[in-house]
Image 1: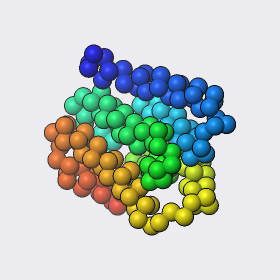
Image 2 (image 1 turned 180 degrees about the vertical axis):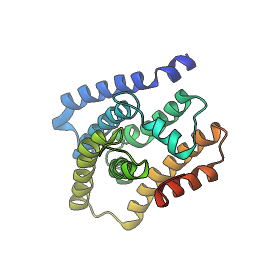
Image 3 (image 1 turned 120 degrees about the vertical axis):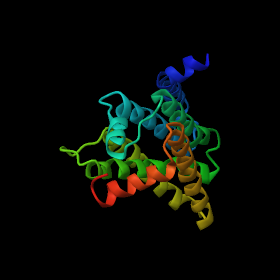
Image 4 (image 1 turned 45 degrees about the vertical axis):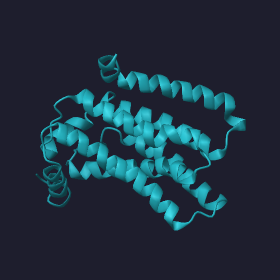
Length: 204
């Protein structure tokens, strides 16, 4: 069962996204606005995973070639990513009135758009596109901007709540990344040095 889940994690995530889409369509009038937006973002993230890894795919290969990082088991990285997505974008569906949880996936949506545009420069791509950019820029980012704008207008959110939301999103992201990198046999500090070099020097 464990191997089945690991090897088919993206298909299972897709099935969950279809369920969320149907549930959202049926319950839309009764759902709080932030819950609707989190649902849309979860669906968008799953589409994003397909674009990064399958159609057209190749984002992992870009990282491998540029940063000297090779995943010992690609499915392991996928399952860690799936766990992260569930934690950041699926769990908040059940707690739409907890603002820091609802804002974490919105911040992720903006971060993903920035990263995928920056990847064109980092990886010296010949065309203005990196695998995952379309869903990040045209699906995730608009939902995220609307969600954050809505929250700012409707709620008086203290600064510490924004900070907690960011730390939750970014901290768990770094932890997930570190788990995958260390599992490959590379020191995380070396991986970060390679990222720094790729950003500021244009070459590893």
